[in-house]
Image (cartoon, rainbow, N blue to C red; front, side, top):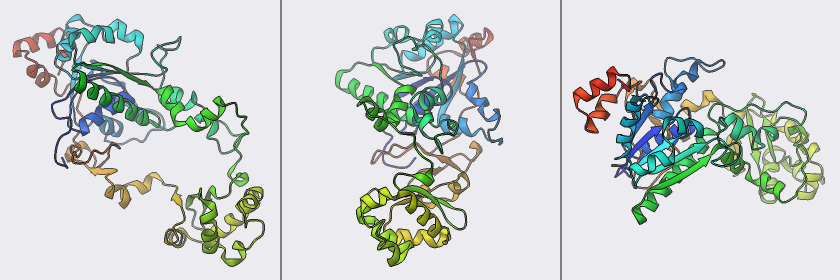
Length: 406
């Protein structure tokens, strides 16, 4: 690993979760040095099969499993069996964090509710992730980030290219990973409280809450009684200086002149010269907003006269605020992502990739553990059970009855 210390060294985490958000939070803990034990059912986490879904990229490497389950130990426990639950309970007795996103009714059937687990270990942090929260008539309702985070929050309705366009589909894990960061924060707060009190406790977040949090500015405006007009297409933007544009060679970028009184004269000089800067329609903020459609047309014409390789350095030199509209094919060779530690090299070439997406939290002096391959199904079952005090004979009996699998 890099850095001076393993911040979470000695912290043991049971990841009794599936798919993305909760396991991703566990991965963030592993990045900081925690020992994370990934508990899967005999058939494995269904996330392992996501890459085979229609429309997903087909590669030899299970990319989703790698990014969200690296640096974990993988074990298989059949929680439908009494013997399997006994194994999990024994592991929970010495764990620091128990993470689950199983639906609430499923937790009851499998015996992994807060009420089931808490008596086993009064120092344990029980971290719960749900789709719609812990209370209310929808508490047990199943959901994914596409439904509870993206659709329910208003984001899906608002992010359309034009008012008459269909609602925009989300991308895989788009809301899960921000929600994972919230769950990570809740777990760290629980661990901090334990440092002060010596007691564990219950922490939670949900996809719906994180979706509303992502849309909090407009959601709060609605709560304040404001009326909304549909968002117009980019050609009719209410502010031409906060809008996407395209260059001659087809590269899109997003102009974000939030401080437009200061930056507009600079932009005008860069792309349009004195004539644009002196245009009476656009000289004042009020005029630019009143004549926004005309300004969009003017900027469209001017930007389409420049290639991106020419325009980008000109904007950067003058300090104009913009962002390139990144494409997936740009990511592997993005020097800033490497320099900032957003993309980091794999520690184990057998993991199937040279680079992996890093988790977004940094703590000074405590670098991330170098990313290693995600576990195969049941890869560490015997190792973990032996460390928990099971004998070779006991492990063999558990395997024979199907309570665990290697």
